[in-house]
Amino acid sequence: MVDEAFIAAAHALADQHQAELQQALSGAIAQVGPVGAIGVCEASAPALAEALSVESGVQVGRIAKRHRNPDNGVPAELAALYDDLERQPMADGAPRFVSAVVADRQVVLRAIPMKDQPCALCHGKDIAPEVTAAIAAAYPQDRATGFAAGDLRGAFLISQPLP
Image (cartoon, rainbow, N blue to C red):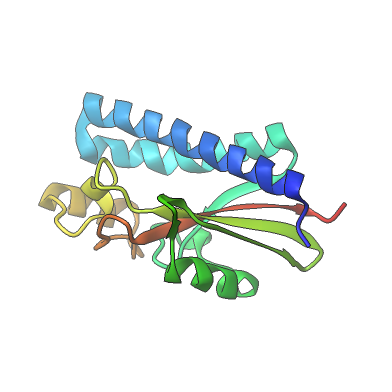
């Protein structure tokens, strides 16, 4: 069973990751537009996850079935948990989470539901052609487009060894 204190910490880390990434992306979109913001996301998302991991002492990241970066795919041992989130990404108006002990680790997956803006600029169904071209250049194996608001875009993955 996953420790309640760890679940609370996982939510705080997911909130921080989401807020800081959205702030960086919103600023980049305002300054250089969606095409320029792709590079900011490409650099900022993994750097932010690494910084939060070092700061907190737990592993922080993001995973998705329809990923932009293949390094962020759903590991086989987490597929059932991810599928559970995919069936219902929201609960009572908030991103839903699932937790479990997997391979001697406490794991929390928290849904990242697709937001209309700014996410739809690069992950939605109606993406500008120049943005589509920039995504294809940066991420040749991209699978992270065609989402509608409320779809499961991915999940925050927060984990640590069992105490």
